[in-house]
Image (cartoon, rainbow, N blue to C red; front, side, top):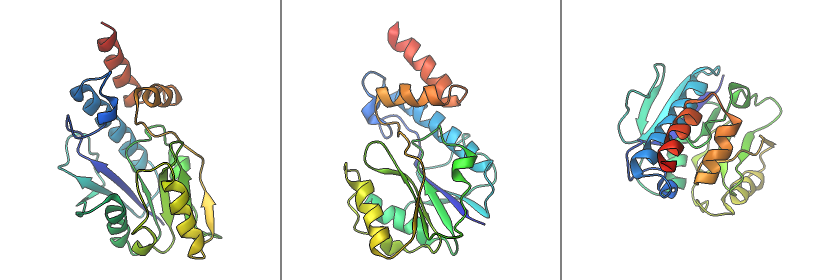
Length: 205
């Protein structure tokens, strides 16, 4: 069975979702980040896995459900931090971020029979999920992160290593206010959608 990894930042004002400000305040942006993280962790908790790991920059809070191992992110760029997360695994692993609260257990239930890697592209050109049957940190180190071509570069790295890649659906990350509105519409009963409604009401006043 697969290890599920979630890489995340502690949702503190001024440290997360800064592209949501404006229209939202730093405190509201952090509240939206916390809701997205909470939704993500609840989905991971409901997905069959051999182990569930939160790879965290910061300290855990009341939003963390039971059943997760918490490990700190290493120093360095995002490629190094992702590589280090996979280095902690000794079997098949799937890693996701905290930016897709619309994710479902069905999307995260992967079977590596017949493939070596799973790749979940994001609409902004990045990727929301990466799965490796045999985790190899070298597959991530040196990939340019946070660019419109990050996803293409990461997928090319997998293919270039001779891996059989199976693609997951393209999802939309929450980076901007427009993203937040679109994602909340896809998951109307989520904590994220509820929190966004409260923040949007405050902005409109």
